[in-house]
Image 1 (spheres, helix red, strand yellow):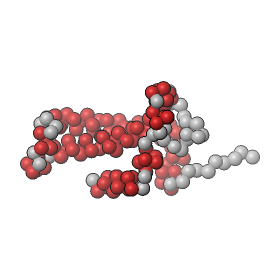
Image 2 (spheres, helix red, strand yellow):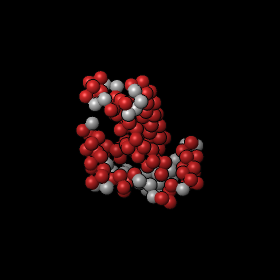
Image 3 (cartoon, helix red, strand yellow):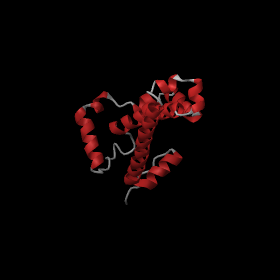
Image 4 (cartoon, one colour):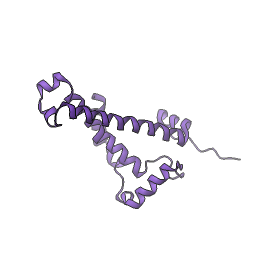
Length: 147
């Protein structure tokens, strides 16, 4: 939880969310989103200009995970904890009871697992070695020119 709070603080204060995750309004047009979705479903690799940046679907997915799914899974998890509920009963009543909290928690957890699997699959599809090297080192691989 501390790591998540540090990430949120860093993202807000350093402008990471605004710069890297909030898509420009031109990319949020329904036609543009539909094109990106179709390209993803057809497993088309991005062009060189998009190869190392997030497209609008990726940005919206990351925003949903960070600001909707993670807080919801924490909230519903706390609502199922007897010790937390006895201290803060509004946590469970705001969700409609413990059974509702369990159901929401289950579906949000499934969405997080699906997000993880799709994320890993897309990394493999886009070039596992180069992506992992870039994630670990923080640098993009240099293009090799054929002589």
